[in-house]
Image (cartoon, rainbow, N blue to C red; front, top):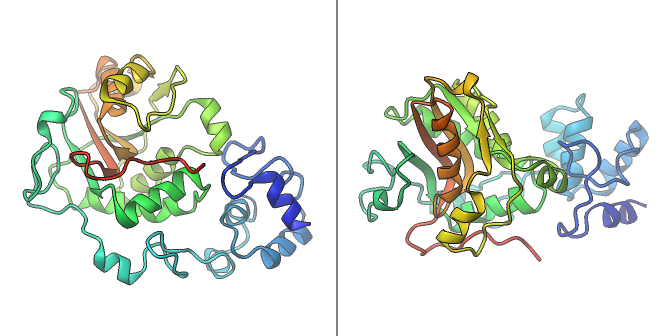
Length: 295
């Protein structure tokens, strides 16, 4: 029974059929199964299914995090080891960005400065590290494999990076919005999950002032000119929540900067005094792989 439900709802992470709950990544066949007996059966029968983990987290609010982690243990994105989102070995091998770095583009001094590639509307940019290795895999799992639970750990890292970066003084955190159609397909907006957790950790409020008013094609594999054309005029900001604000746009990756530049244009037009960006991974000089959705 569980196998048939999982196959109908989520086929190897490639064929999502989300239910009506915009925050849930499960399929339509799962939505009526809310009884405790079904929950218990799924907990026992499908302990390795990340999608079931997400469903339980959304609907079994009485279950503690320890119980969920015990039945659906986190897995390291670098080596698939159980128990942690980032295992000690992969953490030791990871080389996140660290100071001394360029104050504006946030790239460490041992890497060529990227200020020339930054849009003029962006005040500062900060990223956890290059888009490769463990971090690349973690973003792919979060963005394309339905592993929304991974956003908690990644958002913690973003929030702590804000606390450790004194020049990055901001008044509000703004997630890059998805079009409603994409939210229905994916079940959630990964940038919003990251931004909410980063806001909790850093103490900087989340402000929902940015809206995507036009659906855009996927940016993966597109040139800079194509990306800029795709997102031109795709966002609108609320002047009431932007005027006089120093805002921080949060997203999962920074590649060409076309998307965050379009966000910054909308926010500045609505009265924001400055717009910076904070992401998990950054593509440096074409040396890291772009994110590719699973086939």
